[in-house]
Length: 514
Ligand code: UD1
Ligand code: CA
Image (tube, rainbow, N blue to C red; front, top):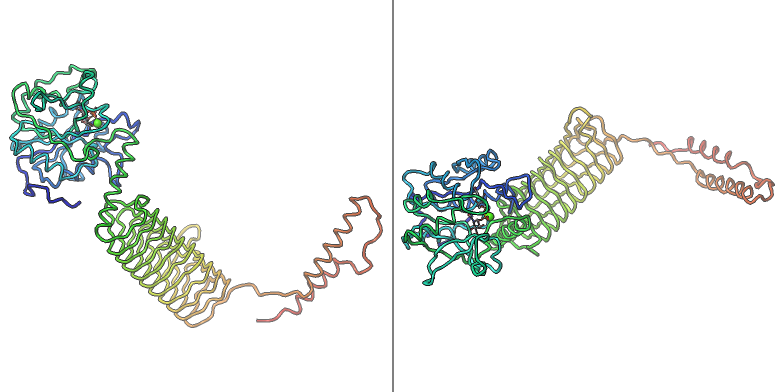
């Protein structure tokens, strides 16, 4: 993520510990999965939060874990964050008491961040820290003005407009409930001021929990300075409590990613229908059509076109390549100027070299299609190498699996494979060879040879005509019976069955030799 110019101190903040609260269950998600592990924008909520904190370069990043502690810890440690276990979870104030034992002695400031605030941007955290430092405050709250404050703690200010307390909704008076400035659960604390207040917290509320929000009122009672920094965009700082909020968080993160790509020179039509994972890169003048998904570590080169409805995962598409509509690419490579699709399926290990062409309803797996080679229609090519400038006809299948093991098909350069050919692997076709359409190739075809392996054609003159006569006769014969009409014989000619037999015999003797 690029860090905006508003970050005041790109220098490491050696006096700062960031504490991320991630021990809660997230009851309103109604999920078997801990809330901070749910994905938005292609990453777990907690990962998004950790990434927003990292550019501040704190001396310590401490994640408080509790619910599904093992899995949450694994994610945090993967991202070089430390963890502390809060078991049981007795409230946000209790979480900071647990954190205290793990906080570095050198830390003077702590920033507390909710583990589900996945839309947070580093600039906002930097501005909060800056406000706190400049204001020489004991605590600075990141607050937000919202149209509907229901469910949030309210920022109560005194007659002079200074922060007096945070009042949770359940304890609020009707007048306090009218306040639209709410607590984001993100704060900066000066630790020597916080510790005495934290020790004084009492679980005097409906949930019998220790509320970190009560520390604000206590600081004010000790005449300490408490500030609030109002976030420019309330949606950025508020957490994600329900599935609907998760969907909205995902939407915003996707839109940010799309905006980032468009800013770097990528064309996107109906970007709100396009779904791009955070690690995806795309080159200038690439064109991405509606309904495309670019997932995982997909890389799209300059001037590529990715057609409508295509899904690319961990795919590399080089400059000037074209992916036609409704193609599916997974862990594969499409080199410069190559064309695939529409309706192509490239499975892991598909390697389409420069200028090669994969057409519609063609599936490739673990197969190299060398420079300029073509497989334009309806084929399966698995565990194969196809030489440069070779043409693979429609309906060609590599029979790579014998029920036990996979085998290789090797096709040379400038080969012509006729349509509807089955290549029974292991098998090799030499450079410049031809394979006749409809062949079932079980033996190698030498270079420059013609391989043909199919039943000979037999033409039976008059057979069809005789067949029609027989059918008509049987029909006539049947109808009167139905109608109970005359049982009189219907034909004076020789029996049609005999004529059909005769036609068949003629065919056998007269068929042309190849
Ligand atoms: C909290 C605030 C509220 C604020 C709101 C913003 C309190 C008492 N209230 O309420 O003022 O408007 O956030 O979203 O702090 N957690 C722990 N351990 C615990 C309890 C919670 O780590 O024992 C973590 C949760 O995982 C979560 C965060 O703390 O990430 C906030 O907890 P949550 O239960 O969501 O608090 P709210 O009721 O939303
Ligand atoms: Ca919350």
